[in-house]
Image 1 (tube, helix red, strand yellow):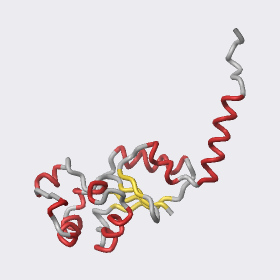
Image 2 (cartoon, rainbow, N blue to C red; image 1 turned 180 degrees about the vertical axis):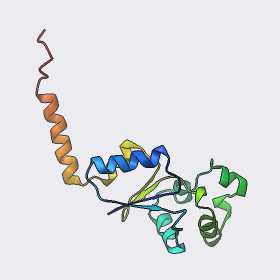
Image 3 (cartoon, one colour; image 1 turned 120 degrees about the vertical axis):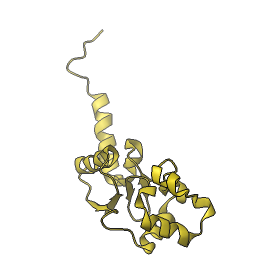
Image 4 (tube, rainbow, N blue to C red; image 1 turned 90 degrees about the horizontal axis):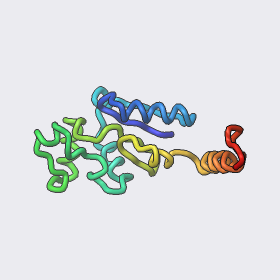
Length: 140
C-alpha cells in the first residue's frame, strides 16, 4: 500500500494522484492538516527517508522561515512537536510505502512504487514499440 500525505491540494499532489490512478496502484490519501500526524508517524517518516529531515522539511516554506526552524539544531522531540503544530513546514506531498519515501512529484522517482513485475511488462512493451516499425515511417 502506498500512502500520500499532503497539506495543500497543489499541482504536485494532484499529479501524483493522477499518476497512481494511471498505473492502477492503490493509494491512501491523508490531509495532515485535518488529520495531524502522531509523533510515531513522524518518526516513521524520518526512519524511512534517506536524508532524514532534508527529505521532509521544506526549508523554503514561508512557515519554516517565519518560525525560524532549523531541523539540524533541534532535538527529535522539538522537531516532532513543530511538525505536529505546523504541518506546512513539511514538503508536499509526502509519498511512501513500507521502506520507500519521496516528496513532491517527480515522474522518474515515482517508478519506485511500481512492482518489479510491472516494470518488466512496461519495459517489454517499450522495447517492442521500438522493434515494430511505425506505419507512418517510410523506408529511405
